[in-house]
Image 1: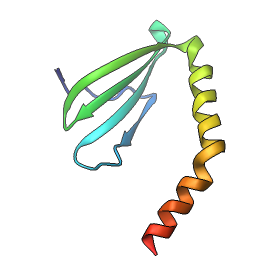
Image 2: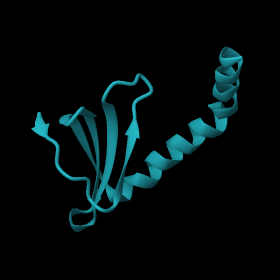
Image 3: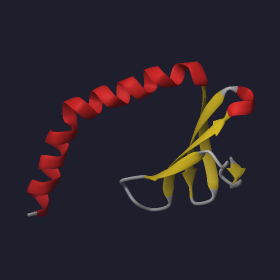
Length: 83
């Protein structure tokens, strides 16, 4: 495990639905042709995955397909349980 490092200028942070200090960081490393997906708990990186830039469209397509198929269903369940 490594201590927190500043997020590169090109990236984002997504908080885990379970709460706590869990997060997914997405950072682009154009100089090495990689996108790094890293799992964080507080300020400690607990794991990372290096995805070559040319494989990003396939990942985005998988996420888009899942979103198209399940978003309304998942949103409906959340709205039902909140009301």
